[in-house]
Length: 333
Image 1 (tube, rainbow, N blue to C red):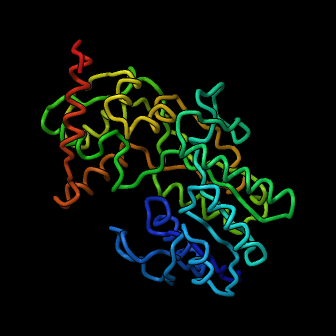
Image 2 (tube, rainbow, N blue to C red):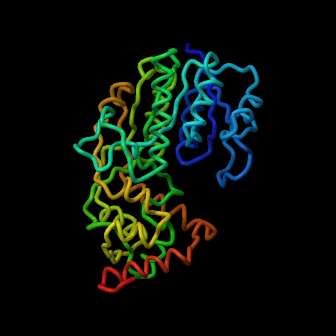
Image 3 (cartoon, helix red, strand yellow):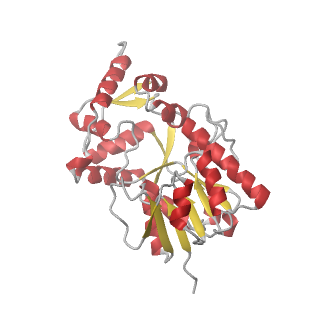
């Protein structure tokens, strides 16, 4: 009979980490979350031990964990290389595996060749978020080579659950669909995208925890289903019971009119991505993603319709979309 692993999550109740937490508990491991104890809209997860600390503050982390030892530490909240550097110092010698949640957006943009594999170069001149993830990876690779720090890098692509809508604008865009108002899709709508349900992601992810073959390497976890952005919008519309009126606008125009969306669009979503998942399937035998986005889209719509408080409409986004529709129709925006 296997012994339960002691696992620490920095963060633990987000889109990815909540699903992973449920899988870890189902496997019989002992799970601890270190969080600030505020801000999550998700209910607490039964069976999880909680520590209060700030994942962005190394001293807060050290104070919270004291002299405890963990078989696995996963940081879902490391976004800056300074955080990764502090984690290397904090967890060296007190964990058998440190898992850094990076991002598939770190792969070179534009992508030189498809499918994307783990050895595809890392470079993203468009998005600081991705560059910071790359810098964190560089620190971990150096620590592994120099001192054997037991790191594993995991690169999710676009991972979602019922609470997360993959289209720009979120519920504001779905509300436009419901009202029969044009919705904006970047480019010509034919670029390819991979969406992975968080439950599928979690089943693969737990197979990497405590897996000695995952040490010292990077692994991406994505579904095999590939959809165009027009198809993604169409499936969400079908879940709402409507056929969306789609208007195509260049990615550059969207980035100009909606600057908050610009880096993630130009640095990720505007590019076709197809992933080779051989590595994770080798490390986690039998795993494959099983939830098609048609099912995921229905889950997204049902989750949002179940509570009016989840249906927030952003006026400034609606105004921006109207400007983009005007641009598509030959106006100046």
